[in-house]
Length: 121
Image (cartoon, rainbow, N blue to C red; front, side, top):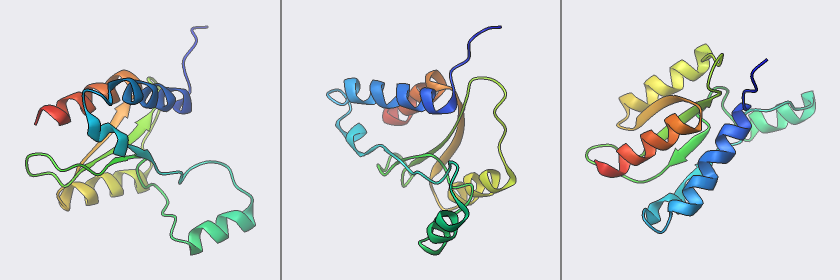
């Protein structure tokens, strides 16, 4: 069996790259993870929902405007086998309709490539 990093490990690799590259792209310091996912107890899930957590909201946000986009949202998936839920599809489409670049990335390499292209806009 071939080892495949988890979605969390892929995301960690993106942030390691962002830390290294923040000298070249200072706006990378604004890149943030939105902790909407994960296993929670029922009471904690209720509390989070009341506080505004939205199911399917993208994992990463870069609140930096570029060439007509208000910012960038990334829904991270592992390199192979990750699927978008209906809620994730909804959010990516809704955010794009509001003027954001909102994309799915399969693995750290794809997310890093998107970030590099976004900074070139």
